[in-house]
Amino acid sequence: MRSAISMYCSENDRKLLEEIRKLDPNEYHAGTHETSIVLYFRPELVHVNRAVDEPMKTPQGGLFEYRVDQISKSGVCGQPSKATAESGKRLFEANARSFIKWVKAALEEKIPFP
Image (cartoon, rainbow, N blue to C red):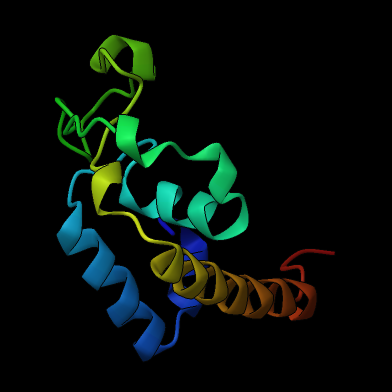
């Protein structure tokens, strides 16, 4: 979860996200986080025996964004080999809790102009 929604994370959820980020610090696409969530919901779509770890070649927070095919030979920017269904369950639940808080805050926010 890398957005304004993350400001609605509980401390426990923030620790979980940090724990996953430490496993795969430069994940961008199809790494530990995304693969874990797919393993949780649709494990038949993930072929762990064919997983390719390909760390992202460009640092996050760079000036430009690149298409995955420009920075990855395999289509992976991360380490899917570290993914687990249990992590996927925990990540999905953390994301859902934060998203619910974010939506509630958005619905309650007053428009600052007439």
